[in-house]
Image 1 (cartoon, helix red, strand yellow):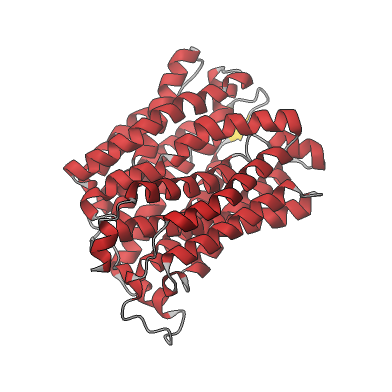
Image 2: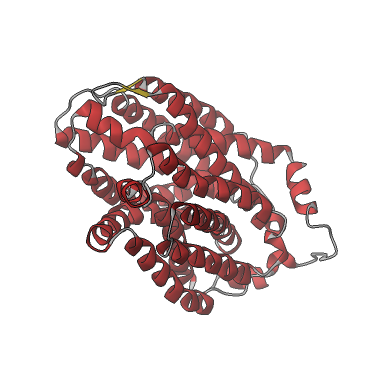
Length: 403
């Protein structure tokens, strides 16, 4: 009865909006670091490799904490767990704004990343709990459109704030916004305890993880998710340097990649979500994944190209590569029973973060920069991304869903 009431909750749209903001906040907290690189390097006197550590510590902390979170995610009311984790993320982000030196910032970035990674997991777990499977694609699309909003709104505003008030300003603004948002989330999010029915609190905390790892389907999900990340994150971190060094874009034109790509994906995420509900998640994923191979090939093989054509290519690339995520996560949230969904999504979040880091690391070993700042072997990275995407299309049909 409680599950039925949740499914029919009158405030479902408000719940999705709350979850979308949480997703937006932790995504923006991560992606804003990359364009702020010059500010940090000047402020702290660090080199590019030290800045790389500053960026990657967020991802790896998210991966580690996501794995640890799997021990506890399903032992609490989803609402209480969400408020607790988002509060930790908010404190970590606010602490970044007051970092006096590089090493302090490194520590608080790890804290923000640790909580941020769990935020992403618990948001998707809630979607799996309260949204029926036949409408889950649309809801996932709305949640995932947070990435588009972060690109279109968050990054430009963050850059303006940094230019006018210093690098502290974007973190302070996001932290305060998140802080004021917590009471609203507490009011709107319903109590979610149906996954606790019949739950024995005396069970060892590692039992949920062991149970997840005992399912063959879990390993298929992890492999599928790894291929999904390799299909995008081998390319994305080096997209803007390639546009400047090989395609001929100016540095001040790079913001248009995020602006137009973000606007397009904001609409496409929701459209793809609705299509996946109407025609089936596996079928929609397969079509979008196959279509993504063409812009991947084009983008990773571009030479000097007019700005308008380059922006069309990068926008289509973003629409289709990010579009795979919507049906993919709608499927992933449905591959485990509700009593294990929180722990399972925490583990998958960990796999996602680590796979993203490894994909970027692999691409970094393959790509090298010439004296003219052009990138070499980017086309090989594109072929690796397509190969991973081909495997993901095969795997998506092997995944078994429960609800």
